[in-house]
Image (tube, rainbow, N blue to C red; front, side):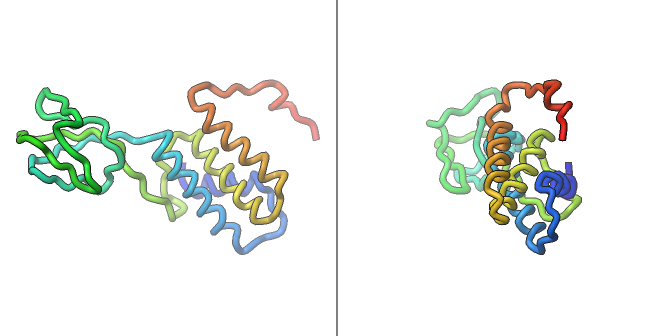
Length: 172
């Protein structure tokens, strides 16, 4: 899903009548905050990279968290290397090393930028954006509901969310 779609969802959630010049800025910043939080803590993206051996090796630019370091058939343990800032220091010689790691996700800026997370979390990002805007507009009751729903989506990531008849048959 792209940023424009998430922005449109957030605008639908807040249902703003008075046009506020700050709306896009507030929504985009909050959507990015939620997006980066989700992408680095919940919906992590794993990648692999083969690196040549060097006693001190600079980690890839998109490196976030090491899952495994592998040389040939051997899975290295934490005694075989040290991680310091953006480098990996090896305590013995290897031919090549395959790193399996979670990668960092860059923020999104353009309407066509794709969010690299599951679509249900894109909806959560829209909710967080709507929450932040509701706080800005001092609509505390709506803000509280949106934040609660946002947290429910994040906390229920392991279970499937169900829709009941009451959710689809609301009366005005």
